[in-house]
Figure (cartoon, rainbow, N blue to C red):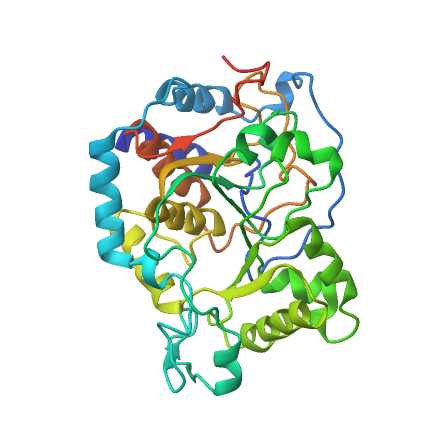
Length: 357
C-alpha cells in the first residue's frame, strides 16, 4: 500500500497537470462556485488531454479497487473502535445543550488561542441532544461533489440509504437528481458560501432560506467554532432558519472533536493544514453507521472507466483551492479502507451505470 501512495504523490509532484476533483464544495478560505450545470463530456478525450502518467495512475487505482466489495466485519470493528476511542464522534461531534452547558468554554480548533464562553443566547441555538447518540444507522451514504457523479445513475442508490450526508450545500435540482439523489439528512455549510453567495447574511436572507428548501428537514452542520469570524456568521445562519420557518435546523461542529479527528488522521499518516469536509463526513459516518458508502470521491480529472474528462464538481468546473487539504493522500487512505472492507468507495460504479466494469 505504501508503494501505491508513493507512486501517486511522486507523479503529482513532478509536474503532472492532473486536475484535482474535490468531494466538497470548498473550504472556509476558498472561493465559492456558482451552481451551474457543466457541459457533459461523454466521449474519451484526445491523448493530449491526459496528463503524463495519468493512465498508469488510474489503472493502479482500479487494480486496488473492486466492485464486488464485501464488508469485513473484523476490520470494520477494529477501525471504528480506534476511531471512536480517539474522537468520540457519536457523543460529541456536534455541540449540544447536553454536552456544552451555559458557562462552558469552547476552544476554537482553527485558532487555538481563542476561547468562547457559552452565553445563554448562544446556548439556545444548540440542539438538545446529539443526533447519533445511542443509535446506529444500518446504511449511510456520504455524498461528495466530484464530477464523477455526473452521468453515474447513483441517485437511487444514494436515496436508498437510511441516512444521507452531503457536503457544502450542493444543488439538488431536477437535472442532477438521477445521479446524486434528492434525500438529505445532514448537509455541511462552509462559511465561505454564506459570505460570497449570500452576503454574509447581513442584508437580504430570503435567497438562503429558499436554497435550504431542497434539503427538507436536514440538519445543516456549520463549523461555528473553528475561527472567530465563523461564530457570528453561523449564528446568523441559525437565526435565518428560525426567522423564515425553515424545516432545516442549524447544528455546529464541536471544535474538540475536530481537533481529535485531525490528530487521529495525522497519526495515520495524513498531514494537512485542514481535513477536508469529505473525510470529516466519512469519519462521522464510520462511527454512526454499520455500512458506509461513499459517492463522488475521485481526485482525478479523468473518469476511471473510459478516461473521458471530468469537471471538478458535478455542477461546475470551478478549480479547487488545494492549499489546505491533502486530497490525494485522503483518497489513498479511503481506498485502503475500501480494500480492507471497512467502507465502500463507489467509483461511478452504481448498478445502473453502463460504464461499470
